[in-house]
Length: 374
Image (tube, rainbow, N blue to C red):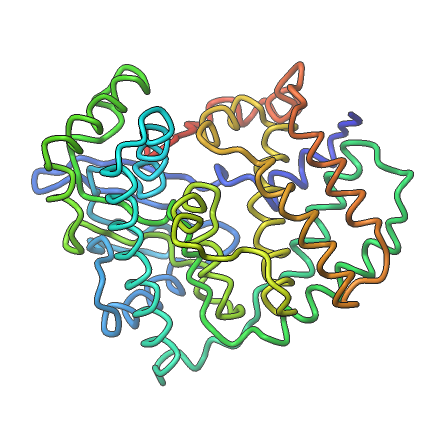
């Protein structure tokens, strides 16, 4: 690898999720989650959007307690993310094919599907949201991502001019179909109000899995899986438009949820051009960010993405590129070669954490794997 200061700075600016200052504040009435402003979305923009959404949608958003230009404060939900619980159910199912694990996973997924359908239907019809016209900057995000990974891995032998031309073709199809608010419907953006599964209650993953197993067998977990216990978070992406299928991909074909969709026979790779290009964009972001963390910020990767496997996305991205060639959306095989190389790069274990080697000012970053701050 060839790591320079400029690579680290670009990673922090474009991909590093932990740049946002988060705080937990305990008051006499409740525990408060406070998120400070970042470079992406102003607090006033976020607050205005959330006020519109709460009038439209039927699912829960954590109660807003206060906001200033500097930060916004929510009621803290002492629970676990849908992603973490679904991952637990998958690991338990893989070790013992008890149908209760998959049944509960499907029950939770059906609730999330219903919520996403409600979000898309209500926001599409809302006159109060017509001011949102910016499209998700797919070309910029995908180009910057692959350029960074290519430079870090010293992939000068690839024809980057041809790759960039194909990336532009893909993102043009994506942008032309962008007419729905971008929810970013990944299962990491939903918290279940299940206090007994809050991560700080457990010394290790084994203890957590044992608790989930007990709750499944007793029927306690099933009782928790009701809409009243689901809270959706992080709506900053809603200031952009995307293709309708984008959020369905993020929900149904995230690595954590794909096993459940496979059980239902939901096809991932199809021939529809918009589906293919949207799959390419979303899987590039999912897989590419995780790989960049692994290569440049390995200590952060081990915590934040300790339950993820970025190679899942690159294995499918190769198949997606093959379909894109068949559809004549892209014209050469350099992207296929790139996906092969990046799939192999997923096995790399860096000798040092380059982010904290180059940026000593970021050494105290509080990484977390479930509901902040655990």
